[in-house]
Image (cartoon, rainbow, N blue to C red):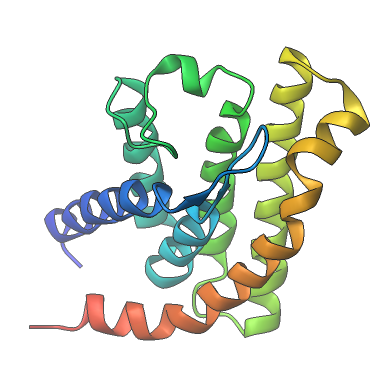
Length: 171
């Protein structure tokens, strides 16, 4: 695939992340969103390189203030606020899901779970540094979402071959 096509796919994927981030269910402290699903699907379908570029682009456009994060939020205050660690963690989630591209489903799932663990660890760490500490931060911001995110990882793995084939199909 040409570099131009890779960058174009990464830009489209970043836009998809921005749209999917707005699909949220309000919850106290951390809204229930589908951002992890979108990031995982991008990594599983298009691999590490495009997954990482698109995630970095998504974070970058949010950092300069465009309202691409959940709840139409943007700016450095989101990235460095209590829930910003989860957004930084998307980079590791994209990386590990990208490693899972073209692997058996069980191996891809394990890699995605490692990425998800890192994503949640960064989120809980930043939340605890700026608010509640330790186990309280985990219970408030991560624990309620683990099963949802694990299920959505499996859905992303299941959809990835179809997405990959349709996006990467030679025209």
